[in-house]
Image (cartoon, rainbow, N blue to C red; front, top):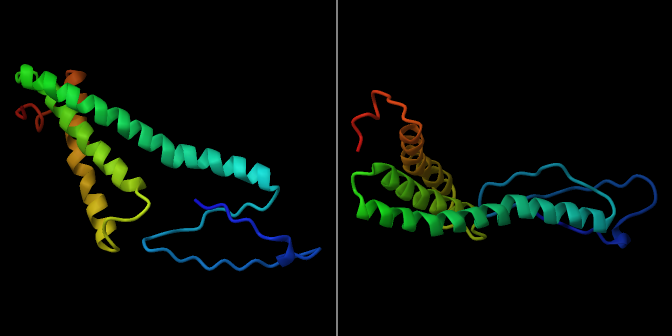
Length: 146
């Protein structure tokens, strides 16, 4: 997400053509381009940054703080596998989320997208099993796990 002001010296009255050359160290895309008042655009940009970057970091921080506490409960009561599923899944989810919003990629393409995508099952599986067990659903493939 970028906010790029265009100096008035590059604009002229009437119709202006703006060419955008987009390059980045990892996969990128160009969403809708907004042109208008700088204060209004800055407000829109700040809101989007909060929702797409700051929000996930805050939620990852909360789950990172909560997961070890739940793992301690699981260590004290190992028969309660729900704690283990949530604690492990939560820590893996938090690491995956932090990895997603890092400003500099850990790996370069194509390895970044491959490992990032492969990370999903490692945190989704324990969290899905946690939800199924919490709801007391008995599915054949999960009834023997833990």
